[in-house]
Image (cartoon, each protein chain N blue to C red):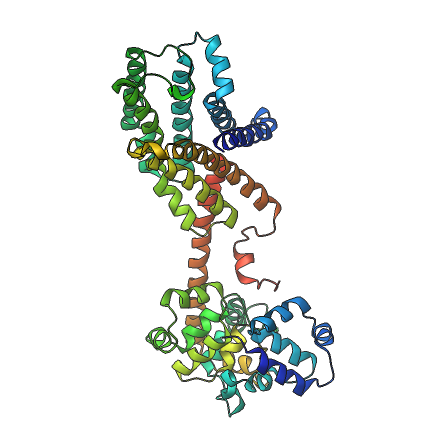
Length: 247
Length: 240
């Protein structure tokens, strides 16, 4: 079940990335293309088969997982910067890329490297699941969940305004998906409290979050394309004084 | 509340005794599946009755009055007040009237656009509102205030709410039914050119102030739209 969800997420993200490639080559919103590419890479590195293959090449001591962490940090920093700008949240923008945001990112990144360095990580294992348990590894995992959740908290208020606002329906739907994914990241902070019998919830929440975020971001592009094509465009004075024909 | 299907079928037999439902829909230009669905659910929309009565040359008001909910429409109906008539003059026509009275071009008489216009429902409610109308409507019908406002913003109002609103305001129901687009002013029994006559009765100052109010409301609505559009464009620019 989790496997299916993981591969489905990978395929969806890859498809979105490829779909945006021609536009990116023409110079259209390249940073968004890189965000999708990073999300795809992160999903790839979290699936068993590719993880094991890559980690073998990288020396077999799970440095791939460390790479994955930094891919995620980069992704969420980029998503945070773009989204706070998009949703017009100045306080959110400061919290992500202002001095506070950069400090948070720097401290989390440094601690992540340190935790990884002091742990015994010999023997490739996806998600470090089969490594002997230890405080430093637990801390390492918590840091990996913390930064995405921090960015999510900065974004959610601005996105919520759009979901509730009076924009195009598709745009609001896409924003709602994005917000759903971000909320799951915030929710993932309680992972340590999940009883062992419910451990399958963790990957479910993680992949659902990734899928929702990818679909939400892609949906914003779709809503734009639909609006450009559609006739429901804003017409100003002309549109506000002419009675619409009944459907 | 839409009309119960039993009453609807009874009414339909009265005006078109030997016509099948399929033929009724064809003549009235309705989708058969939609009407069938509404009949199965026991809730036939008032608009369907209006369309069918038009097709069979029955006055929609008379048709509606044969249903219990709209029995009041059968009796003598109070004519619309001048304020109500004016509320159904489109903003651009008001502005044109200002220009015409000031003796500037175009001075030629012009036809008033048929109601409803883009803010008909809201303008109608404002024309009969003494300041506490919404409160009385909410109390009488149980509708939540924000839902009532949503109808005004969307420029629509279910017929039953129109009736309740006009009753709460102590005016006849026709202006509301015209404003919500259910019936035309002719079907409402308004004498020809009654809106024009009400417009001509306005003093210059009242005309100017009314046009000014409308223009201000239009400006505010446009400002809101532009603001929304800017926000949407910023999202599309960054994440589209």
